[in-house]
Length: 65
Image 1 (tube, rainbow, N blue to C red):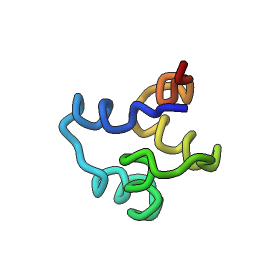
Image 2 (cartoon, rainbow, N blue to C red; image 1 turned 135 degrees about the horizontal axis):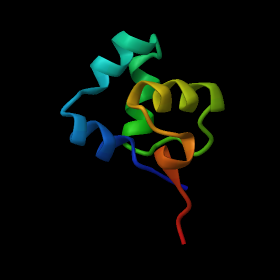
Image 3 (cartoon, rainbow, N blue to C red; image 1 turned 60 degrees about the horizontal axis):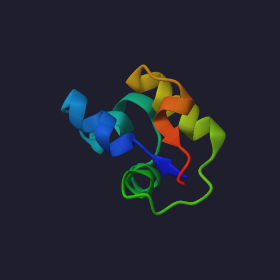
Image 4 (tube, rainbow, N blue to C red; image 1 turned 45 degrees about the vertical axis):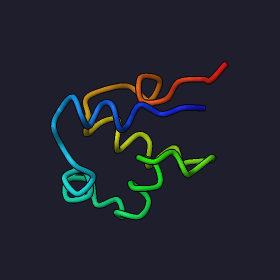
């Protein structure tokens, strides 16, 4: 699974710290998501990030071939 978190943040010219401040999700969790270090992210976390970015969870994540 690949996430588009980094791309979506870049398009909005925002940083992990902006998402942290707005959602309350820990910076370490967001950084792991940003660098795709986490293999099984929590669905609640993904939903909060997707809501903040104005996208669906499907748009945030994509399946790798």
